[in-house]
Length: 314
Image (cartoon, rainbow, N blue to C red; front, side):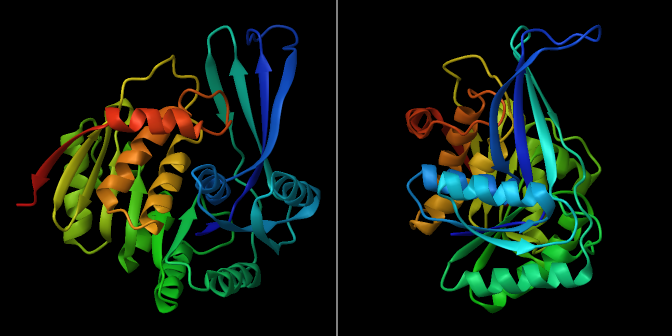
């Protein structure tokens, strides 16, 4: 499995007893970890027993720290040097309210030649990987069709692209076409101009994606309700399992879901079965504070609780 993180972060996770606007908030550093969509996906693949290499940008002192953190964690990665500084993000967990706040800056600005180096590094690393995951936002400086070019290049080397992004980069990539798209209800709403409030709404979005050829497989999540996975055969509702504890943070839930889908597809599972494990992993991720990774044993225990309902396409 190969992943691409064009706009990674060093995630700082802090914990406060009670967040207040008066005086100082004394914080405890909970963790410092390499982050960003594709890096989180690669980490999740490994936690589920798979193998993954993360291709990512790296710039300045923060970029060097990012590389060290990945090395220390044992994550196989390929760093593409850039001139501007890699970003840092902050996750603040309030223990009193049990709420998490994820604060993320936009990141560096890439030059055209740096974007081309990323594409070349990705293509070179792809080898015989059957699937490539591109996940996360685009940094400034890159054209909106960057992921569309990724899809084209990946197709030329015989791999399939799994995409999880947002904004103009998402629309441009769908015009090119991808193998599998994972989007949340906010991203889905941006494609349709309508709120996604139910699994029926998610099914309608997926049908549109399949009909237009934007994706061969569409997976749209609807928060605590679960997700709908759609293929040429039909639409399958995947109802989220009841949580065995209070939810602590949704940071990383989507990346965990994509990791599970990619892992199981590589192992030969069908998209619906792979997505069902993805829903279980996303639920498990909700039980961990800040950006801490999901517990794979908890995810596997929740998998039988993911109820399904199939509907053929009209």
